[in-house]
Length: 71
Image 1 (cartoon, one colour):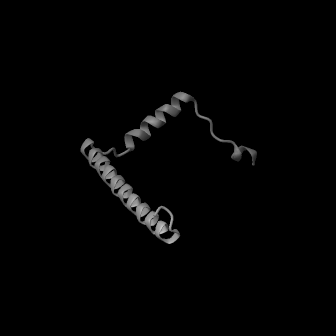
Image 2 (image 1 turned 90 degrees about the vertical axis):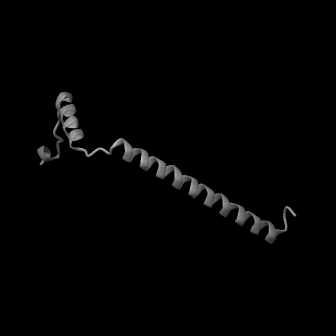
Image 3 (image 1 turned 135 degrees about the vertical axis):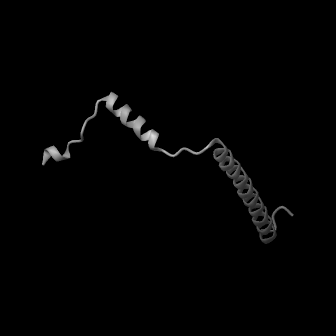
């Protein structure tokens, strides 16, 4: 039972060879796909930031109207 619980140890050279072999199996995106994805992330971040800013402003105005502060 104790033998099954032991993890198989691998020497560092074998480990890095396995890592390299797994890295070759990965389907990497092309540079143009990476640029497109980056642009989309930036655009969506700007849209979300604007939405949150506007929502915050609307809520702040509503709270000022309700509480009468800042008049």
